[in-house]
Length: 244
Image (cartoon, rainbow, N blue to C red; front, side, top):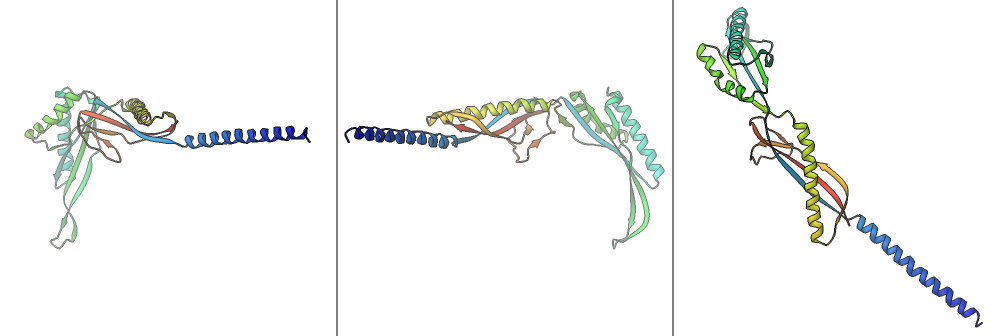
């Protein structure tokens, strides 16, 4: 009997010790699982100033005459004068594109709104487009083009559009900067509560905002401004980090 008691006591002690160890291991596992589910989501942003290196300028000439032949002759003459004017201003033919002519019929309409089928006149339009890296020259040209009206050329001019040709690489660079900004913000928040951030759980890219310099415009669908030569590009990234 005295021999069995120490054996039973030792067995109970071992069992109790095993239960304590199992409880500790289980608690640690649950705690790790709980903390593994702790995350923080922050938004990082980056802004870069760019200067447009290309310009696109569009316009057109038109004529309206009783006969198609007359309208066509006038538009052809106007287009030839516009092309000559561009050459005079040092614009090479290689950057100028004249589009196909478009014709509209002006039909007779009675006071009651009925159309008689009679054609009163023909309208013919011909558009042109200039794409160039000589931004300064084309910008000045678009402003001076109305001078052709003094010669009787009915030119219609759209505002020039300013674009940046290396935008794709800038976007990649700015996404990286925005992600770094998100990490810095997450680290600041985590340190304030005595924690630290771990691996990235997810990341979502926001829309790019390409706006005039120093503009505060924002759109949920993104902005791609072409009205200004000097622009700001803003990238936004939402990143979720694990918290340890």
